[in-house]
Image (cartoon, rainbow, N blue to C red; front, top):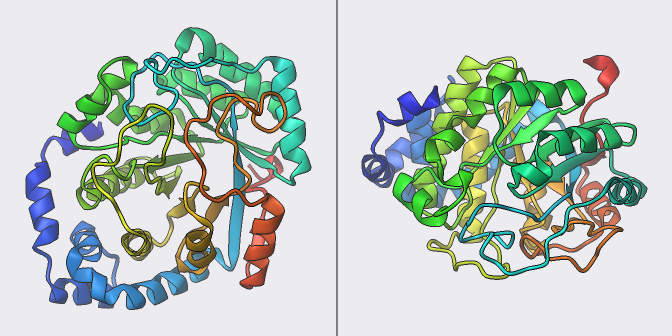
Length: 369
């Protein structure tokens, strides 16, 4: 389990190691002709790398185009439920928020599918809160069964499950699972998750191991930027990724970069990451790992997303609604967070094409599996 490797590292020592990286360390990482390691990644996310941002961007662009071509995949989330038994300080769905709860019925799920399909999508991400009695495995399995006729790629971002449960959902048609640790800082993790199953740090930390053992096609990792020092958290995410790629080498991986956004009843960010630092982090991941898929959501604003296409990302969401039934069934239900880029999928498609890239609406065909 990753927990064993994780416990050999000390947060403060890692943080100091990153901050101590020098200009020479950054130059060595950029000029390396062999596979870059975690020490190189530390250098690329360090303050010392900021003067090299243009060079990093150019190298990230080259490596991304070499591996993925001039393509950007579009996906869209479908929020199935805002019911949740966790208290999380940064989420609008938190149990202590006195809001109207909603879980989509079969007919409402189909209505959402038709609305999303009309936008051109063939790749959807199903999202729920953590409420096992309401939106547990039977509910998720049924939702996947309902949506399979409409979409060729179904991902989920829900509560962590057991290995056998992931195997059951994969058999039903599940392709990808996103499971963000939120923060790898154990004390701050407890601070932000005071109640509910999500408060178990180790159980969440070991979820990608259970996923890897289940044979899932793709695992998505990430941190919630704003909860803790983003450089140190990002190192631990890269450490986690490296471990998983070695152990579960048949599985594909993606990294997302959610920055904490406003929502009803949530905290202010502890750490603010500016746009240049986010560009630095995206480029660092690409230079560190040429195979990883990198994703940007509608949390980011129009200007940032306009300029990030050529710098390393491979997928973007567009036209997102972060409330259950937001596309067709219940547009007024509570959002998990406020989006920042509210342009339509067609506008994002035009943006991608205007930069000489091709929009990919679906990831794969089942006939190829």
